[in-house]
Structures are given as structure tokens and as C-alpha cells.
Amino acid sequence: MAIPDFQSLMLPLLRMLAGGREYSVQETVDLLALQYQLTEEEKSQLLPSGRSPIFYNRIAWAKAHLKRAGLIERPRRGYYKISEIGEKVLESSPAVINLRFLKQFPEYVAIREREEPSGESQQDSTIFADQLETPEELIEDGAREIRRNLAEEILQRIKGCSPAFFERLVVELLVKMGYGGTRQDAGRAIGRSGDEGIDGVIHEDRLGLDVIYLQAKRWESVVGRPEIQKFVGALQGQRAKKGVFITTSDFTKEAVEYVRNIDNKVVLINGTLLANLMMDHNVGVSLAATYEIKKIDSDYFLEE
Image: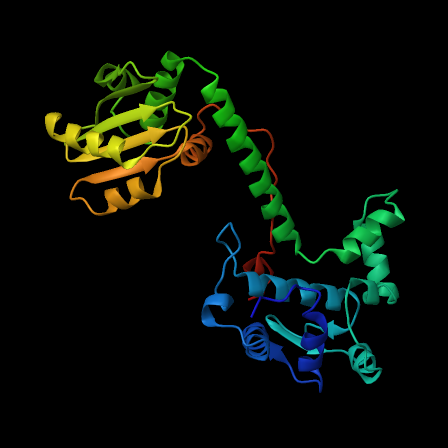
């Protein structure tokens, strides 16, 4: 079953808390997961950042909005219970509880007005009420979209550059990733192949304990199995057991499967992965903006 959005969790959460008993954070997660018949894999599915489970995050935001409206309370650290207002809401048998529903409570409206920038339009408020993603999900979805667009732009720029520039780019990326020793060492180890690409041998580490054979092709067409077979054969001539094949395009399914079934360790880097490695290691990109997301430091508020 799909993980429910945080607004869909509000009414089931409030119903679960009915009766006045205090529930721990973990209890609410486990009971709601049981209600929605979520698998362990679904329960542990993480946000793209890998910092928090999606289901846990959505329950947390459902609690936050219900608490703002005064429907639930936090009697002590890590525990929640329904409030008198929450009990009265359940007595009215609401069909749904969502952000639109919560706007009937003055406490909730007052908090929203303090948080929203002055001059927000009614349309903006409606869009917020219809939003199903949590703030973390919105931020991470936006960041992924920006990253995808940047990757496309990086590849377009690479394809428009000269072979000499492509060579320098690959060398710089490998050095930033910890290969080839210094940039000067890596530059001497690599030479042009004459077919819109480069090839050569680089050190696996700064001590030169092992060598890696490299080919990088600035191609538009996909790289097939025959090209990879030639590459693997060239490893022997370079006394290398490991190889890296980089292309600005992609590899065929047959080429990928071939690499999986050989003794040599060969890594295939297509255009998308190349662009992502450049972003990860700050090659050809610069920092545009930084946003800090902070959370409460619970230990700070503990009194001895």
C-alpha cells in the first residue's frame, strides 16, 4: 500500500488518540503503519536525503498541525494525547481532517498568520491547503529538480567544448575523486586517442599502488558491447586489472551485462553519472545558495 500523505493521516491519528491515553511517538508510528498495512520496507523508506523515514516525517507533520489547532497536546517529551477540543471534533464525526478543516480554529489561524509573510494572497493560502507533501519533501523534490536541470546543462556544455577541454575536465574530476595523485601526474598519464576522446593509465591512489586504465569518449551515440570488449582487451596491454570507461552518452544493455560477467573490474560512467559526479565534487559548478534547516535541541532544555 502507498504511504499516505500527511493530511490523510490527521483523522486516523486523532481517532487513534481518542480516549485520553498518552501515546509515545513510536506507538503512533507502529499503530498507524498497522492500520495502513504498510510493510517494513515501506515503513523504513527514507526521504531522498536519507535522514528520515518518509512515514515518520509525515506523521510528525500531521501531529504538528493538529497540535497548532489545539486538537492534540504534548503532555511530556515524546508523548501525545488528544485534547478536549479534539474529543469534541471526533464527536462531530468529520469525514476528513485536513489543513482546510483546521482553519476553523482561531489558534491555528493565528499561528499561520504569524508564520506567513505579509501580503500573502488568498490564492497562495489555497495552494498551501491543497499541498500534500511535507515541507521537507517539497524542499528535497525542488532540490532534485534543480539538480536534474543542472545535469542536463552540464552535459550540453561538455558536448559544446573542445576535446582538449574535455581531457582537462576528466583529469580534474578524477583528481578531485582521489585518483591519479596530483593533477600534474594525472595529466602526464593521459593522452588523446584521436576519436573525440582520451585514454591512458592513472594511479588508483597517491602512492601508485595500482593502476587503472581509462577511456573517455565525448560521443553522441551509445557505447555498445564491442567497444567495451576492445577496452577490456586493452587492459592487458596496460598491465591493468581495473578500468573506467566514461562517455557523455550512454551504454547499451548488452555492454552493461558484459561488464558484470567478466573478471576485470570495469566501471561504466555515462553522461548522467558524469554530470552528477561533477556536481558532487564541485567541478564546473559553483555554490548558488545555502539554506539551513534546524531542529530543536532536546538536550538543551533538560533541567538537572
